[in-house]
Image 1 (tube, rainbow, N blue to C red):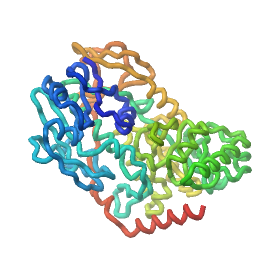
Image 2 (cartoon, one colour):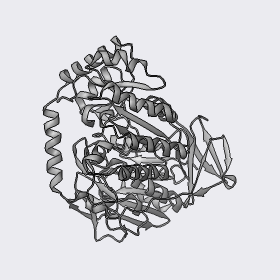
Image 3 (cartoon, rainbow, N blue to C red):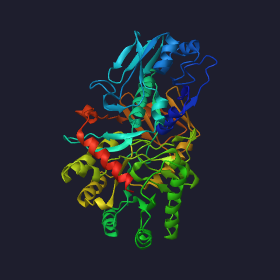
Image 4 (spheres, rainbow, N blue to C red):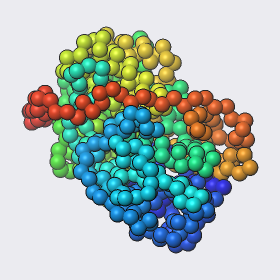
Length: 509
């Protein structure tokens, strides 16, 4: 049978998530009955779908992930709409590691339905129909993933005062992880392996260090560069281009580093012409200094459709901001009613400067980043941290680099990761599972796969045919839900102060 996910109602937000995770999927027009052998799981997000064909798929032993509206339509149930700013997983549920999910739209909850509430905080349900199994989610996935609004969010730490930054209003990476966990469970219900492309080139991990050079001196930049040399770190530097002498005399001479564009004016505008003018002036100064660039990172982590349009027109390969997403996998944003050609590479948005503003000691800063690194390794996600040289804190950066090297984590530049990711996206591998064998068709041996069974995981290079029982698995460790996590969304008077400081900083530039 095909290990392929069929999706009824393939909207841009769903496509982003499925491509991020590297899943084998296709859009389905449900004009005829489907066999469970055609699709290992169905995603049904279209509440106008053909009821009888859906029930037939379940009846024959299929697995389905329903949106609440689609579930209500198929099973003739009612739903109620509830306003929530965030969802918080139950401490002991199968989804406890998800933690807190910020959302922007109302959720839909089934009413008087004969299904089991799996997680009361996330409002996730599961049920059975004849031979089949299904889950029901309350979130409007497409609306949440396409939301490009920003707001200040606090980030968890083992202390009272928490750091904050203006980032995406919706925690999209958490939504993706929730959906992936559900898809895993639905495969397990059918005694099928769950398989997707690896999200980083090396299973051991990936470390990217991003440097934004706005307002730094040559001496401050050089101090960071010396640490990169000391620890053999290839960093990605996004350059403030107003000072041409600094570009020509210093940055153009850096070795073993990637150079990209940050800005000419340290600002993102609410119109195309000013953004394009700003970017073109930055590109011109880089070119005059014999510096070529593939990547861009916007001031303040801001992003809008006008900026994206200019980045596409100026042939940038990728950009990296906080507003499209953070703590997430790369993706192509959906902008101006189409997918952008510029890859977005989300990062962890809390810099050492933000930690200092929240009165962290150096010891607390180092612990904060060690905790972030541990989380990313456990979740098989890239570790992407950024810093401003004018904030100095060399002791903290030195400790981060030492820790990364002690763990043996591979280091790439953003451009290298973007290039690998684009090849990964283009790789369309068909996978089937029959008589205990996994078969890969149209495979690319440079892109490895993660294979899951129950609570076990294996990373392997695909071959034309693999005997499932011969695969060596290890325990798939999951994170524990963080303590006091709900306190991140409690109002504090400092939030108002930080918002004022951010407004003043943008206005003065």
